[in-house]
Image 1 (tube, rainbow, N blue to C red):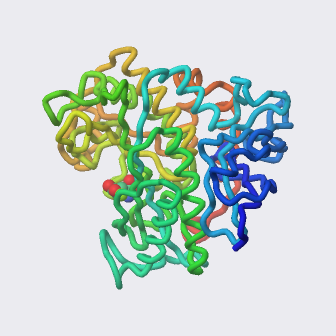
Image 2 (cartoon, helix red, strand yellow):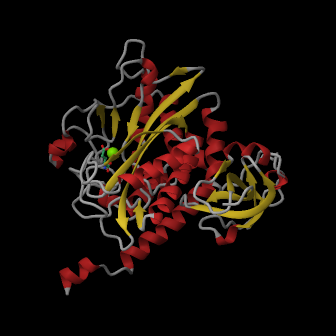
Image 3 (tube, rainbow, N blue to C red):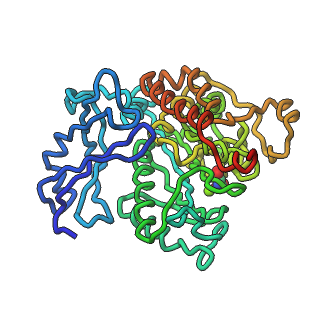
Amino acid sequence: MSEHIEYIELRFTDLLGNLKAMIVPCEPAETIEQLKEDPVLEKGSSCDGSSVTGLASVESSDLRLYPDVSSLIELPYSIYRTAAVMCYVKPKMASKEDKDFFPLDARGVLQNVYDTILQDLTFKVKTEPEFHLITRDGAPYDFGGYADTYPQNPGADILLEISSAIRELGINPRVIHHEVGKSQQEVEIDFEDARKMADYLVLFKNLARTIARNYDADVTFMPKPFENDAGNGLHCHIQLWKDGTNLFGKDDGDYLSDKGRSFVAGLLKHAPAITAIANPTINSYKRLVPHHEAPVYVSWGFRNRTVLIRVPLFNTAKKAAVEFRSADPMSNPYLLFSALIACGIDGMKNKLQPPEPRSENIFDYDEEELAKLGISTLPTTLGEALDYLEKDKVIIDALGKPIIDSYLRLKRKEWEHYTSHVITQWEWETYC
Ligand code: GLU
Ligand code: MG
C-alpha cells in the first residue's frame, strides 16, 4: 500500500450504467480533505465519447469529465492509495461552471430532472439490490435459501466484506441476508437522495464484484440467472420530501396521502414505458413471471408482494413510502430514477387517481378475471417495452430526446440481434 494517495479515478458511466474511469495522477495527499485542493479536481480530464457505449454524438465526441467533488472517496481494495470521484460528462469546450449538461450523460440528465421537475422537492429512495454469488465458471456458489447463515450460506464472509467496504464509504446497508434463490443475496441500502443513491449503486455493484473475485468467486446482477428459481430485483422504496415533510405521509398513521396516491397513479400510467428502462435486458423479462415475488401486472396495493407497487407497513407519516418492485439491478440507476421522478410527478401534477388497491394474490387470477378487474400486464419482452418507451412523451420530455433515442437505438439492436441471430441451447434441444 502506498503512503499517499497518488491517483484519482475520474469516474462516469456509459449509457447502460456501466462504470468507466480515467485514472489521473495527482499531488501526493495524505487525506481526502487535502486532495480536495488538487488541480485535477478542477480541470478534470478529456475523454473520447465515441468509444463509450451510447455517448457518441454527431455534434461532439471530444468530451471532458468534470469531477463532482462532493462524491470524492478513497477506494478500499487498491494496492496504490487511490481516490475516486464521479464526474459529469460535458462537451470539451464547456466550462466547469457551464450549467449546460451533455444530453447523453445520464448523471447529468438526473441532475437536470432535479432542477427542472423536482425543484424544491427531494426524492429519496431506499434500494434492495439482489444478486447471485457464483463460482468463477458461473455455477451457484451455494444452495442456501432465505435468511440462511453458515454453513448453508458459505458466502456470508464475502457479503460482510462487501458490506464493510460500502460502510467505509459512508453507504448505509440496513439489512444483509441470503435471499430465497440458491446462492442469491441481498444488501438493502438505506434511504438517500436519489442522486447519491445512483452513485452508490454504481459503486456497490463494482465493489461487490471486485471483492467476490478476491475469494475466487463472482457476482452476477443478471435478473434471472437460473431457470425456475428466484430472480434479481432492485426494489425501490420512494419518498418525496418538501421542507422536512414527507409528502406521502398522512397525519393519522398508515395511510398514503392524496399526493402519494397520485404519484402511484403516475407510475402505473407510465409503467409499460418505465419497464424499458427498469428492465433493460432480454433476460429481464424471464424474471417478470408469476410466483417468484417479481411483479407481472400493472397493479398496486398495501403490503401485497404480488403487485407492482406495494405500500409497505409504516407507523408514522414520516416513514410513508411506496415500493416500486419491477426494476432490476441491470438498469442504469440515473435513468431509472429520472423516469420514476418524471412519471410520479406527472401523476401529481395531473391529480391522477389510482385504481382500487389489490390485497389478494393476483397471480391466482386468470386472464379473463384480470381483464374484468381492468388489470393489464407489464410488457413481456424488451421489444414490446421499447415500443412503449418510444411513445411516452412524459419520459422523453423529461430525460430528453437525445438520450432516449440513443438508448432506443442501442436496445433495439440488442433485441434484433437476439431474436434474429442468436441460436440458443434450448433451440438445439427442442428442434434438433
Ligand atoms: N427476488 C424477488 C424479485 O425478483 C423479490 C423478493 C423480495 O420480495 O425481496 O423481485
Ligand atoms: Mg429481496
